[in-house]
Figure: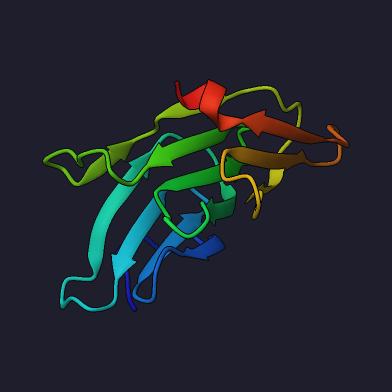
Length: 135
């Protein structure tokens, strides 16, 4: 897979058997579908710096959580329409970390629970009830 965007890859997450989500050093997040000749699906617009953590929610794979060097967590809804420029806008932005968000993960038993972990200056794991966040 070649790409005009040569920014280093920092994170990867499979959404399904054929869709791979890529987080890059420049803050871009991109979906690729390996079933198509034109594999590019869309960009996710939101992070200003490197995206070092990506995780799709549970079995449905509807929500994507991303964490970045910009100290932000974004939640994206794959069911929201994509713009004519094939860009997707974040659904919710969480700005409570004081350092790089190194990890995000959805709870396997409670689909609405998201955990995010900060870096060296943060030293914490935060939990988010996304029913409240997404309401």
